[in-house]
Length: 220
Figure (cartoon, rainbow, N blue to C red):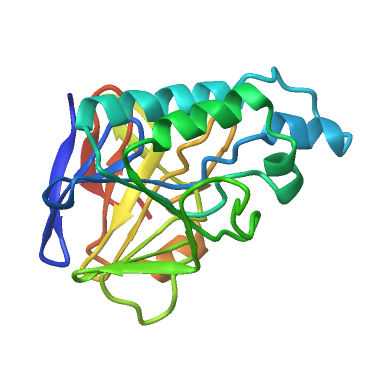
């Protein structure tokens, strides 16, 4: 499996091609912003009609990462559902798929701004969670250290040989790590946006996701 290994807050982590974060010492897989049920929510609110396969595709990719890593603990880092109604209306087969993925694993749902926590589903439901030097929460906080968050759906652009490639990306510096959105149909915020440049230090790095993840200086 292609991945990029790096050190953060004294821990050895890996960025996976899918946008998931792997912490091998703890056998922990972390994903952010699944936004399950987005196509249903958009149709319900009169938005664009999208093919209703986003939740299935997102869960398929998550299942693939779980199979490859053998993770014992899973953290869903907030906005796991596109809104609370999307969680409540999740079809039976997809509920069963989540239960199957949870079986035999510790599963932690972190509260997001779109969803206060899918309390109808199994697992723990927390505002944030700390393990060793790392704190997992949905939205980055000012002055935090050893923080792993999501929310912003960062993406970065690599320019080389007259071409540019833009992909969802991990962003990290000495204090914080922001994960890309894992869900299908989730879009993103460019790393050059002032919100992200204001959060990340001058030596921040980006890891572009995709078949061959690549680490570069964070584009500003």
